[in-house]
Image (cartoon, rainbow, N blue to C red; front, side, top):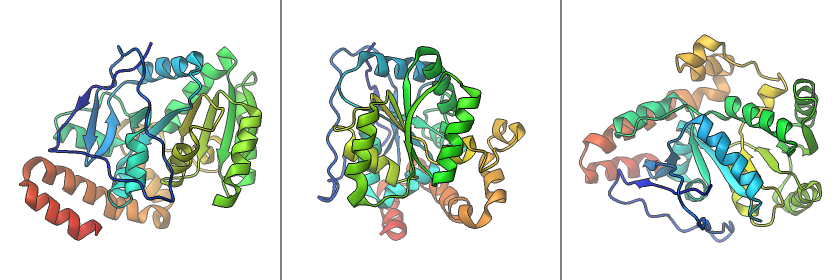
Length: 296
């Protein structure tokens, strides 16, 4: 099973910006046999692969079992990452060259609907990653965790093994290290040789780390999972099911951490929706003027 990217261009152009020299990001290598469509489209120039969770799990299994010799990069696109990507072209470059970029959050559902590409399924990493870890336990895949503070990632491993006692966790490393230490961290990961590497460094650090090192990592699949370890370690409480089903998990998280989430809720969500509606209904020159004023 190989993957075909069916690109839907809902903008006039979405050429990729040049990557600054201090970030070395290799270009994606196309698959040899193509028969699986990811139904790719772009929101404000940032890629979204519009697929369902069942398909994602099948593709992840294929990535692990094909053992192509190249680490496959799985990212999640949400309102925050799209807003950051408007001013950080390195992040946009990394996201757009992932092997799968999954739609995360109710904001993308609104954006996709407005742009004529209804999102098939909300694939947030907090729900999807544990499902993939269940498959890893069943099939004997090994897992490495990178990110969070030392007590958090340690507790995360402990609680994961309580829920999935046969899960092969071959190592973990806290997420607090500088760029000079990256080569040593990569060496530790490669020594463990995991099938799946979970990177929880936050956006944009995690996407840049994965993209920078994908061609030297021994991991078969690398997933950028944001704040997942905080939830798995019970360091942060998950929103009740009602909030999640109604697409209001962002509101619950804002009420939990108003200072930390203030910019995302009060600034980024209105900006994202404004730009999506402008992209759909305003003349192109007016769109560019507004974007220059906000992100320059």
